[in-house]
Length: 202
Ligand code: CDP
Image (cartoon, rainbow, N blue to C red; front, side, top):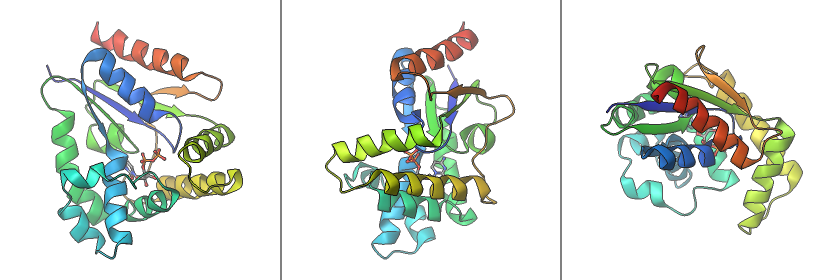
């Protein structure tokens, strides 16, 4: 069976958790496409050329344990502006989306560019303040040296760069179901996403 669930939305809206849970629920594979950009950004921080890094990306690059820092997130959104870097990463994502057995991909351009034919498209969002607080708790919980103000302004800067860029800007596809998680628990958000997929799969 070929079945793609495309989940897009701004930073720290809950895409990661929702994607993992939806994939587990339906037995689909999951690809966090943000990790691809983070891994490319991390290699650029280490001195590599962005396009060369993107073209040479290896599975182990996605397993580095330093990808979830604010510094790498900013580097990711900077390489993500580059059309040639994005182009180098498209084929892998497209083939993952249409793999046998079903796939969930989360990112910024999955429903619009990577897989416009996705059977289900979700756009997961939440207010800036809620997203900032969630990301602050996540990073602080991992022992990172962060402040609430710093995390919120980093997130706003990244959202602005992601939505205003020319190449595959972040936006909801016309046929996406929008899930605003500002007032939801993570369980409620997962239930809403599973229900949206369930109505199409039935
Ligand atoms: O976890 P969070 O939502 O904060 O970010 P992420 O999904 O790990 O993505 C990191 C950065 O990669 C984003 O800010 C985007 O600039 C870029 N990205 C993208 O351009 N396209 C995607 N499909 C996924 C991520």
